[in-house]
Image 1 (spheres, rainbow, N blue to C red):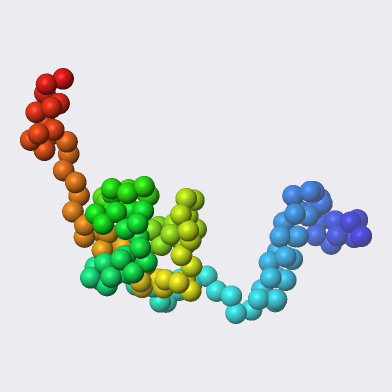
Image 2 (tube, rainbow, N blue to C red):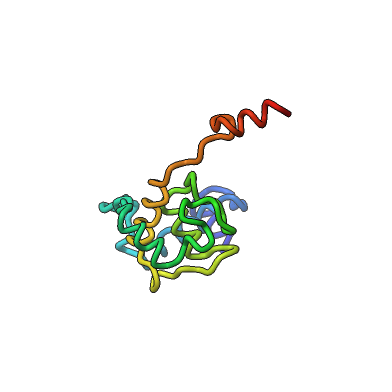
Length: 143
């Protein structure tokens, strides 16, 4: 058969030409099996979640987040939440599958509720630097 193909095409069969033919055979098979697949971008892009800080505060208190993260988001035994350095998507992903706290599934908190909690945490004031607190600055100068 190889001799016949060589005689028909007038070219030598090499490994690369066999791969070339195999590639197009697989491509044709793919087009036959998946006729409706296209390379177009999705037409609808999900809007970013925007939370409500007041609703988030209510949820923060209802689910006792303050028990580990304190009322100000950075004074408890849990991870420091203020200043919030995660995006709402990363925050939600972490809370759903955390390392050192109970997970909060979508059955317990929806994505909208998670965005509300994130918005509340983002609204909490950031603690001043030690150098900006007069008494601490004075103590630091004394050392």
